[in-house]
Image 1: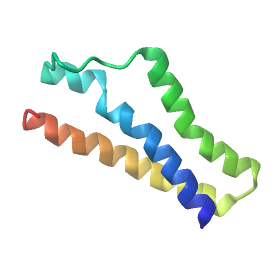
Image 2: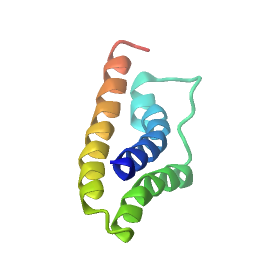
Image 3: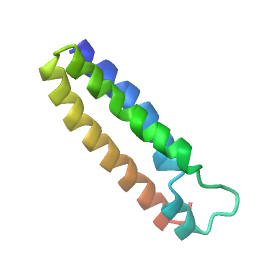
Length: 91
């Protein structure tokens, strides 16, 4: 269970800045004070959020991998949906 929680936490930390600085969301807000993240940084954070899953595969922690896979998918959708609601309110 420690493998699963550790990898979920690392991936969630890396996914949060991606959701905060999503170029499409910022463009729809017409946010002038926030600048979208550079493409290379988005790619690095996206790939970095997948590395904990690869580590669990390499360590043959299959139950932890499946838990991580489900949790990261849910966290990613929750972040996107949560920030989309805020953008609809004009925040």
